[in-house]
Length: 223
Picture (cartoon, rainbow, N blue to C red):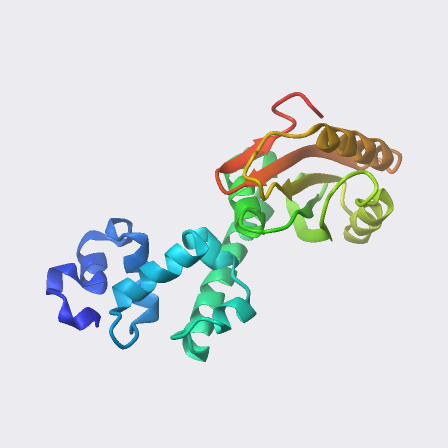
């Protein structure tokens, strides 16, 4: 139990005295969990969860079903973790709705990593932008092995028209952890850019997302 620790070592007291940045990931998580398991204090339980999912990012990507499979994560704890995840996503989304995404590349990468970095299969997502390049919506459109035959320009175009988007940013993850664009990625980007250009919808970038970070194809001169 947290209360068994010396006051100066308890996460809540440490946070109030020194600020949230002073806490380790396990300590922050322990504040949410509040209690551990029989024979496993809450800090150990928190660290075990982080180890299981490879860190906070992985834990925040966990599905309700995955969380429900963990002994000690009852409905209340699961609800709090899912609420925190959604709050983070909405906060990041708000930043991108307030100003052009090209003015906030770090925020774009944060959003994409939260959505895609820890997926075990490839996921193709699109950020739909207005004429001022502010975020309208982010949608996951395709899953599985991604190439020109599995990502349909018509579907991307239909969603862009639905949102009234003037521009889009493409993104997909590499579960292998290799953030380098492949030749298939380059061909897919050219294919989508040409197709959407006929509708006067600009493709501003294509990000390759891994747990280690994001690679911008526009910065590489591949767009």
